[in-house]
Image (cartoon, rainbow, N blue to C red; front, top):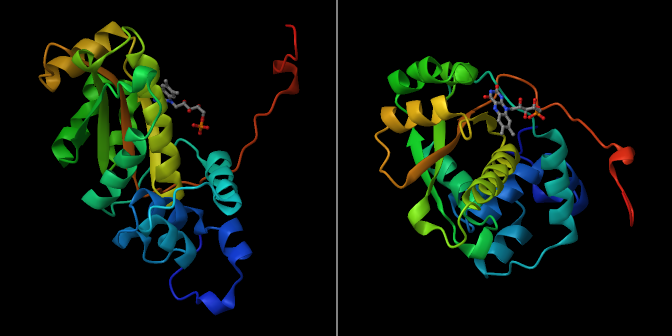
Length: 230
Ligand SMILES: Cc1cc2nc3c(=O)[nH]c(=O)nc-3n(C[C@H](O)[C@H](O)[C@H](O)COP(=O)(O)O)c2cc1C
């Protein structure tokens, strides 16, 4: 994403701003409710967020599309730290996800300690990228929050996808690493982080500023679409 610093409002049209790298700033602005994260964002979006206007805009849809198609699993991160505010903006996106009965069963354990991150591959070899990640979020569900038993897995997945897209919009890299339904990983994470009895680890999301490309991809397969009958 190009740096938006210094780009004056007069130098570009609203359209070019929206269609380009500004998606991150826009998503961040909306998610942050118009807080300091929104500094380089479009004034119109800021104004909308501040006034509580959450009506979808055509421009916002374009920015979401940009984040969707350029979100990639990032497995190498720079050593620039993530701020707590950045992490919380991503978690705000997680918590607006749909959930069965609006139960919102999720809980998030945020890990930023270097030694803790470095040790994660010992319990999840597929999470080796934690060695360069600046944070990892253990996404869990507390079954005590459930309204419809069993849906917590889907609810957490929806929250995670929101996290990945919001992070992408902010220029932050993520990698989703699976825990549920692998019994050995569930036990390892539950034991390591002393999760309460009713709390189930779902996935671990590694996060950081990317040291890899957000490559644009398209995996559209028309043969997977069935109209009217399979
Ligand atoms: C449920 C789930 C579990 C995953 N687990 C891992 C993992 O343990 N380690 C890893 O490096 N990537 C993991 N991934 C990331 C996938 O490998 C990745 O999403 C896929 O290859 C597509 O690449 P993309 O995310 O760059 O589009 C996981 C993804 C999902 C959805």
